[in-house]
Amino acid sequence: MTFRARPVTRPARRLPAQDDRRQQVVLRFGFLALPIVAVLMLAGVAGSTYYADHLTAVASVDGTGISRDQWAAQQKVDAFRYSVLERRIAGAQAAGQLDQATAQQDLQYVKQQIADIPAASVQELIDRALQDKLAAQMGITVSGAEVDARLAREATTVEQRRVLAIIVTPGASPAGGAAPGGSPAAGSAPGPGAAASPTPSASASPAATKAPATKAPATKAPATKATATRPPATKAPATRTPAPSATPSPAPTPAAAASPGTPTAAEEAQARSLADQALAELQAGTPFDQVARAFSTDASATSGGDYGYITATDPVDPAWVAALFALPAGGTTDVMQGADGTFRIGRVAAIVPAATDPHYQQELVQAGVSLAAYRDAIRGDLIRQKLEAKVLADATTGSIEQVHAWEIRIASDDTVTARLQAIQQALAQPGAGFAAVARVNSDAPDADSGGDMGWIAPYQLAPAVQDVLFGLKVGQMSRPVVESDGTYLYLVSERAQRPVDPTQQAELAANAFTNWYTTQRAKASIWRSPDVPAATAGQA
Image 1: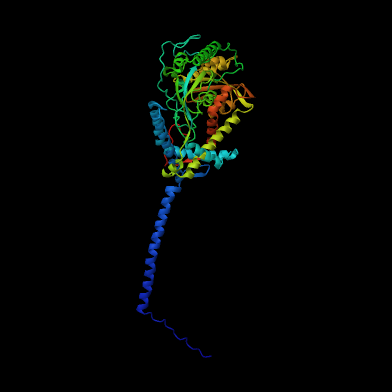
Image 2: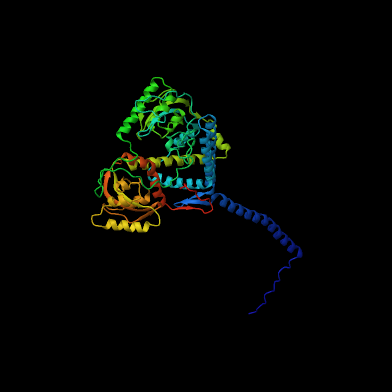
């Protein structure tokens, strides 16, 4: 066998020109790639910046995030609503529907709310997310038609009526010094009085409403508020309001005297007599201002009964307000006794009809407000209102499980520890009665009645107190409970299914939703970014 050597094959030699062409191709593609890489890097930076500026969460509720874009949109909604409110306050003042002092008070309130918008709007979105979830669980929905109707309402200034009033409160003396059987003071000159300062309220009205002068705190929201700019603050109400009870005290007590603030039958009869005389004088043709100065016990008597402008939602006395809005200009009501026991006569001095702004939605767009965001805010308002109505109905309808509660309050001071020990020792004595010890030692307003809080229904009191009371067995006393205004001992003497009484109905109307919602919020997982402004006092 013959072996042959494999021929050696040498690679072809690359010419210098070929190397140059290859380098040129590489360089060409390299130069083309550089701008692409730069664009991709810029896009990445822009995307990251956009995400940080628009899509990052500022808060979350049970895992549902609230983005910065939602926050920004809500701030614009709130700013627009307050701008509308400012214009309406100024317009009401110019039209003589608000006096200067009240207008300035209302405008100052608006300025404070505007300053709080960044913090408050986050809280609104948190509440809206949680309330949407709660509403879905309870079968509560809001239709597009309902949103449309509310949007139209927000574009409308509601009807107002200027009222002259004669108000006679049992036990109070007429401003003019009239006595039963008396007549208007002689020589009182007729003439318009200065418009009484209307009390701000939460009614959706372009001009302020007026409540009795004794209930005119300067810190309330102005009545000129045209829209509910945010859900009401969920600040916990006063933890208790003494309520009368027909249930015997745990310990023998003397017969209870009439409460200091409760008028006697004689005082009520006297007040009715004065109101009837006032109406007779009006029917005889005596000028209203003279009759008001002589018979009315309200502060408005000094201005001839000028009660200011009210809307149909004024809360002072719904039946009286409804009667006023059923009258023509110049009409006068009969004597009407309100649920508060006060007798009222009203005359419609002037009517300002409702008016719709046809450019309202156009103004929204011009202000840079998203109509979708505005409708979302309205929907949130309606959801909250329906939740409030549902909670109140559930808390007041039919027989409700209630506890009859008693309390001893020890005011917070340097002696609280020693006093608590002494009270506990007194209660531990054989035959000691809770009511008897409370009557001697309690600092609560109901001490004279042995600390009797009356019957307590769910959501009538703040959750912290409710949890203690409903956690006690009949005859059981609580451990010391430290609260902001002192240290408390509670006792439950009875537990029963019973309907709520009128006093409880009023308390639940004011507190039920707040107390219920406070409990629901405590159960939720809520996160709020430390980068957003903190909520101020009064914001939930």
